[in-house]
Image (cartoon, rainbow, N blue to C red; front, side, top):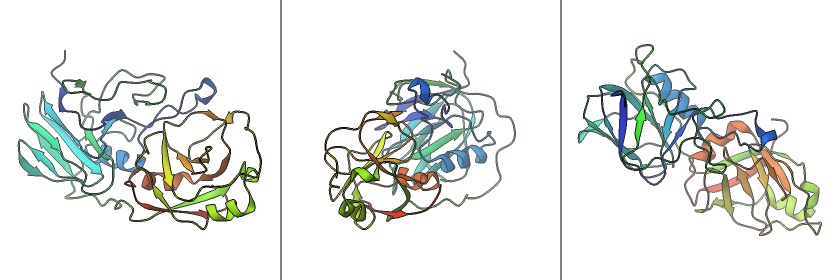
Length: 289
């Protein structure tokens, strides 16, 4: 086992390895996966001198703790959180040196949901179909981190960025999602279609990497029966039998039998990844993608 590695001391509620995912395999039933807040993952990679597609760690709410087997440079971004090295405060949103044997603790999110940890050289777990991402739906890629997991690292390519703190967008107090209608909005009553873009929903605590679930008004169908399974895409807003919308995120299924009332613009999905349960959500009609 290489000494250029990290050992997981505290895995947190859900910490996974993520990169840009594995697009292009939907015909095989394989989701795209990848970092839910892709701009945050790309930024922390840039801060430590990695290419933007290098594998990082994505934490969920409670952070994680890692012990360095060698001296490393790291950066933490995404959801704001306290960062310490051997108990001493370290900056969030900037490159930080972690000596060999030291403990990097990424604390619970102060706001938002997902923090990202980049290490100079990237996390070098074994790729599957060209990606090192953990896919919770299909089970492809490495399993979620557990205490004692050893993460091999690559070697740095270029020096890290020399900035004090890199600006990052704050997690949303209200989530506004622009949607293109259809392809199955005709499966809903006109009143339901109006309610979809005029009601205020809230993010459900049942949300995960597969989908952002909504609490709020149920959307009434105009047609009985079931829709034959058809392909689904990132950002699709599927409406199951309870009538409450679900926005498909990176680990979404590639096919589904519930009607899709609209598709959220890809540019709005990073904010969706940082919306805590209870966040107000509005869907607004927007042309094109």
